[in-house]
Length: 197
Image (cartoon, rainbow, N blue to C red):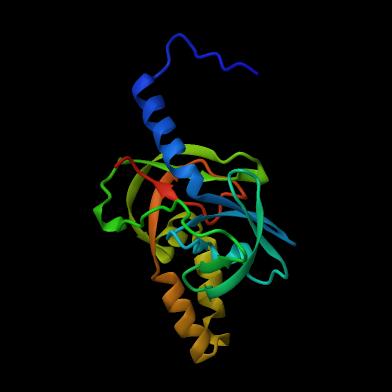
């Protein structure tokens, strides 16, 4: 299929997105499990992959599928379901992988362009979704804003929690988030947000 560009394209935005896509996608992998799929990415040249914990939590089999379609069985090294983070290592993967450098979210500015990379609905190749950063947030602030009913339900259940569950809940609700306007779907979970450098 030939790509036909519209006559009134946005060349600056398109060029920026294309460059980010070409630079970043070699470091992005699809995570396939026996329960579904998500996205992950390499964070060092040795092949360490991070993804969202909920992508692999409770799964029996998990694989990384690289940009060229090669599948590697994954071993979970660390999992943190409070911060929704899993660190994984592919088995028998050659070293010297392209990887993405992590950047502090404290440097983001309101309305700054961000791009999500991932495999929405399990589609391949990776997709890039443009969006913007809004403001710092926590799980609690977003939950209070988008679901006051759930906040009320949570408040009514607190007396049934053990001290450990209350501690974990507090950690989870105070977790800092990158609050942004992005179009993402099931399968994007665990993928990177990238910005122009």
